Length: 180
Image 1 (cartoon, rainbow, N blue to C red):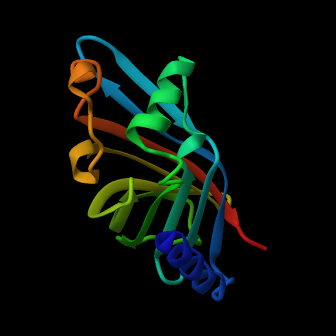
Image 2 (cartoon, rainbow, N blue to C red):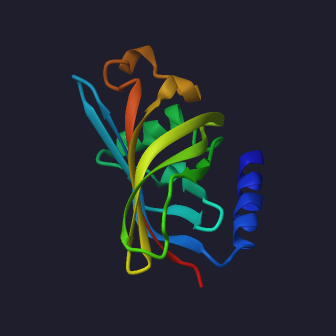
């Protein structure tokens, strides 16, 4: 709850600079776990995110129960046993863009974002590579990075340790438009 309150205050401070504020319109955050026994894919298309082009601040928030799986039982286990979604309702990333971006010019800009990923109630400092693309005043942010489950105190029961990778690949693909 403390992190959600901080995010609301953080987003409010970004909104204070409404000029240059981009809001997510659509997109997804997905993760992939690959093991010899089984691959697990999940996608969350209900992502809330903002970019402040003046300050370089970014914030993403996803409801953990918003991740959907091919098999309903996987989704149930994810929410109940791993993410404990009743207790840890959201995952949050707040950061600052590192790299030169000309928001007034179409193009592809390789960037890094440096900030804090809060998942499963555990905050971890992260520096993540990505690409920010601008076309006709709209922004697309894409990135692919890995998350070690133990870094966020997500435990894998010994019974299914061969079914779930200790490190999952996270893919971000989000579209933004200038907030009016």
